[in-house]
Amino acid sequence: MGRWQSILLIVLISLFTVSGAREIKIKHGDSNHVYNHTLAKILVEYASAVYISDLTALFTWSCSRCNDMIKGFEMVELIVDVQNCLQAFVGVAHDLSSIIIAFRGTQEHSVRNWIEDLFWKQLDLNYPGMPEAMVHHGFYSAYHNTTLRPEILNAVQRIRHLHGNIRTIVTGHSMGGALAAFCALDLTINCGIQDIELLTFGQPRIGNADFASYFRKHLPRAVRVTNENDIVPHLPPYYSYFPQKTYHHFPREVWLHETTEGILPSLDEKICDGSGEDPSCSRSVSGNSISDHLRYYGVDLRADSRGSCKFVMDNHILQYGQGLDGSIILSRDPSLQSLIESS
Image (cartoon, rainbow, N blue to C red):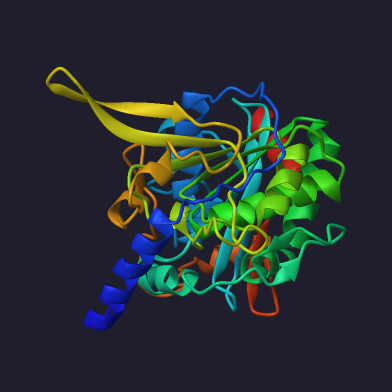
């Protein structure tokens, strides 16, 4: 990033940090959903694993990040949309009795450029069926208009056919969090799956206040975890002077920040209010850190390779896959997998 670009970045951060003359309100009530620290620490490991570029290790769940609290996960579908640099997986976490859907975020080498681009992103799409609800066209299209959506829906349908109405949890980090949010809403509105749980990490804003109200109504069990001075939850900018056009987070935020009790630092997990834009949470800080964006709960949330959309795969794994429009889809029949495990 050049010198003048860096200066511009600092100026813009200052502008949306201090623009607080008039708050935007969204419709919200008291939430009975309680933030689950243990579940968050499990899901952040899934959000980390989806960054793995070794598709063989990821699909067989033998990767370096596929252990600890997520060991034993049953992979059903791994989708790589090479053209759009997107990656996601669907499977079953038997210990949670849940379907897990995880989306990869932006590759580490392009985070700075992506952050710079987010400063200029305008609300440019009306969410279907909600004339006043506007969203970020890029995030919406990355989920709805790529290989991801049909493959994810197909995998969820196959798992539910086998396991019944087990709960569904959607997660992702950074841009992956934005895609996870649209996926969770899609499963609720268009697929009729109730009680979807969404938990994202370092997610950017994806829509306006009307969309946030609509989102909260249909997904009351949604949590956005933000970390210290992570810059991405501050983007695209929130301008209180433009209530109809500005981006607005949906609730509920949980803000991780370090506090000091005595002489020892400790991690405080502040459960924020139901507005989506609680001024006492991440909005209370400048939000200018990329390093805070790349690590949550001590877990790395970045790619394990430096190439854009770089991946490796053993030839024998192709027996599970097919290529569609340049995409790689590795799929396993969940009924056969279950039979193998029980034998």
